[in-house]
Image (cartoon, rainbow, N blue to C red):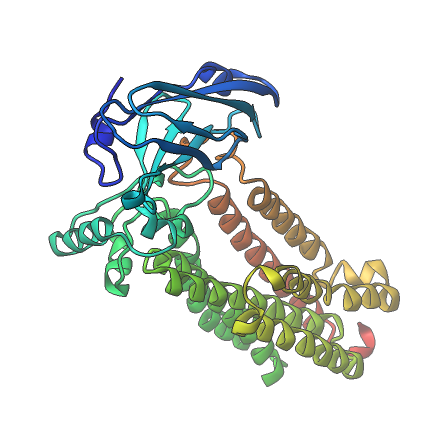
Length: 424
């Protein structure tokens, strides 16, 4: 039994320790979802007040509550439901002193199946406030220009990422300190660079494509330049806002939530930029349907941006509504695609980036599957802290943008090779 973790913690109680719960190997090795009996013991010799042991949060389910009498070994048993094959099983328990003077005192201890003991931050941190010790650590790290990385258990709830156990940056409270973290490796580094570097390439690519179009096609128009610029700059905006969010998510709770909204804003902007260029190419010589579709996606996109950014529509109450608006924005590209297939036929659409659009959809669906399932870290917790599902999602989003750009350039070649619209 190792009591050092508790003795050094501000949240610990003198002489309080917990024993490893039974069935630890079952949590780690069980090949399928199961229910197993868990026993958690609490020993607090020398205390004069009884304690109320309550399971406050768990990745499993402990249903029992028990008053612990002073000076005795006490056990609390319950049914523990394993949620996945290799899920980290842990319990966060409240120890609530029942004496009048200590009635409001709460202490948090975390138990995991590896048998180690991890003290949690004090109650203030669990409400999303900055913990003094964490802020002090971040300040020292910034002054010393050295990295300080924390574990899951040392962070407030709003900053924790499911299945990611280590290599968190401290809460910085400073944009400078957050951007300084670009200089060392942590669990957001891949998420940052996987979009920051492509953003630079797309920005440089915007200038290159303008030169490429002007030199390759004699009949290139201002509308051609604008359509491609909209796509490229929309990609730059999306990738830049994503990198900014992942950089500043350790600043504070308020800044992290605001930057998350900016990240979502970037997604909407990129969807709109993609649709604008796609509709321009599909309806190359049909200005009426092209303008109608541009107007419709503009309306839907504007509404989605408003819902994404307006404070009234934040929070769990409007979560489904926000999701539906995003879905509507994405699906607004289906109508012009079906229209194009109906008017021009499959053979013509195959020359207008349709295969590339399907490949882009495959990349996005694959990325979304990683995003939704949290694989591989959900299968192997702690083994993919530096890169994981979100990093794969980022990479596949970039692949989707590159593939679609290649398709638009190929379609542009086809369109300008047929100099008159009647030949399309």
